Length: 145
Image (tube, rainbow, N blue to C red; front, side, top):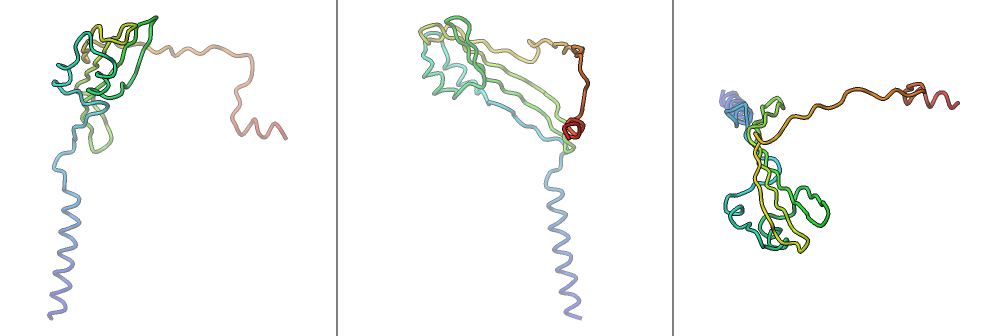
């Protein structure tokens, strides 16, 4: 009888651990930040006249850069999303910090854009016609023999 009681208690312990692993998250939605986390204290430190090196020390390397003529812009993008347990991602908030530099690599301006500042762009779905045959990879290989 004691052996049977020991087996039952071991089975109950294993079941409890397995169920605890399954229920570690009580929510089906998790909140995450993609890209940079832009703290308000860092935004306050970026002012006109500062150098690129100082901006890089405060914010790190930019996610994207743009050069137009002798001016440069650095972009830092922070996206806050809710992700379901099933992989569906919903954007809740997006902040884009743009830091603009002059030819002397000094900050001329900084701008903060939000999700509401963006505009949807229609992607062109038409295709340019070609005068050949569309072949699959396998068809191309078989044709070469």
